[in-house]
Image (cartoon, rainbow, N blue to C red; front, top):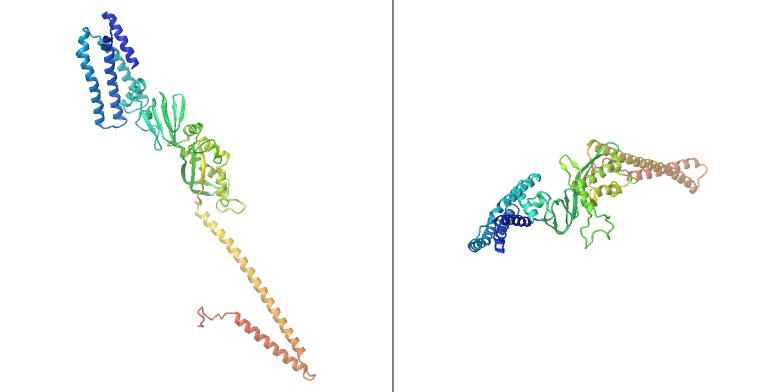
Length: 453
């Protein structure tokens, strides 16, 4: 508006020089004030209509309301101007000398809007006009609200497509990074901010704890067997320059979403690129965790991972410890992330032949242990049987000896009595042994129900 005023004043002064007419307040109002008021109101009307039509998607009734207000204000001013002021001056109006500078200014403005549309690759020419109106005249600064679902650069707002000037309202738990033509400009968190010209939003971030899932991580073990770790779950957040255990300098009631400017810049500019384009922050964190798991698998054998011995340690705990090492933390720090928790899922061997062979190996070990136990039991049984036989023989001899001690034999009947005693004692012992054996040995012909066939 200042430029319009200077242009109009210069034109009027030049015209007054040639007309040789004394300038009065009524002449200044007639030749400068009234045209500029009408032009300013018309520009405001155009700006409001374009904003409602292309950015806020308002109803047509609202656009009609703006147009009605314009004519309600301009109509009475025009009536007073042409009914009272023009006849009062009783002179020739020199407003026509302002037409050429205004035409040049409007042409330059429209050409600039076309240039803005081309360099920013904007499909709508109206957005380029609105951008010039806000940056050149300060009319209808755009406003945008950053929330959890906001994605930078995909909306229809001028702040999304081109950049400032404009107002940004950031909700709690969110942050944005802006940049100018020469580099990063600033990092903003919760609050309302005004960004200047040539400053645009590069990325928007949710500062809440993020959860992730890696369906499968495959790697080859040290002995050349493919192992897959499935259902790896983890939680992370923006790197806050402090370890999780340092609660005094970490998250608190006064600072529920700690972060650093370096972390926001790292997760924005340190992104890796794949065949599909730049990876997201979530994909970068997943890549670091997958790399640490793959590195651990490559340094260990299959049995150390899936069936560790007591001396080998716990594979899951060792992987968790590796994710907390300085090297892994530095990689996450370069991605602007801080790992809070990670749960290693379950291990799976892709080759079925390896699993079958491991089952056979385990089976052989159990069978071998069972055979050793069975052989040891058989040997003990045989030993006890031999001991029992020896004890039985000793009992026979002792009973015979005691029988001789108890009986006083005549001399002429001594030989025959000894033979009879030996036979009787032997028969008693054999009868006792056969009775004991019959009670302990089950009848092979007896069925399970206790009846013979």
